[in-house]
Length: 216
Image (cartoon, rainbow, N blue to C red; front, top):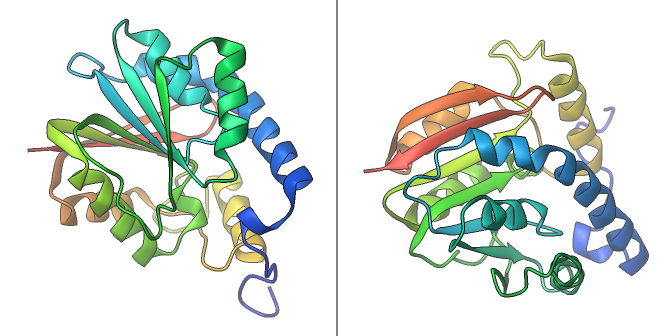
């Protein structure tokens, strides 16, 4: 806080194998508690191919695959994360339904021909400029009428609440170079700039919000 910026010099993919395994395991446990309800709340009527950006263990990608027979998903994450993802997929016997693509969403394009692009617990790690570009990439990866879903802790417009979202903003200040929590209007603006419309918001029972924009 005295410095006014992050104090951790090492990026997530540079903190050692032990740290990464523990981090992905913790995120997997949390995601498994919430994924069924989150996926069930989304409109999957026209969805057959899903991209989970920064998908970690693949918990959400697997839930999308389970929710709709015949659908497939892709987990896009860093090269050193994907061997861990592959093991979680093997345990769930979903290797044939969920593919793995290595890349860095800050540098690489996300591919294309997806009906739904999912960004869960991603935007709070990035700067506003980084999120604007990431959402642009996500929108470009969508089929016509496809949807981009942001799940995150959304801070109130005056940035004084909700309490967890405000505390998470402080955590991101300490632990990342440019991370923060963001308002609904900021996410809506990034989506509008990326050509997405019909934006809706749904709040979950565990504190996150789902903000969904659709490609024309």
